[in-house]
Length: 65
Image (cartoon, one colour):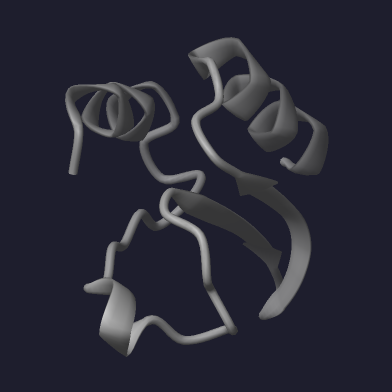
């Protein structure tokens, strides 16, 4: 995990689970690194491909909370 992902995990403690996989083992058809999937009640509700600023990720989490 990167420093940014750890910071987001601290900011949104309890709001989400943060995981990472080796690209060869990635589920959900991930083909681009980094890819961030947002789930709610077990379903993918949003996806970010490539690098994104913290504000974008915070906005998605806030909108889906």
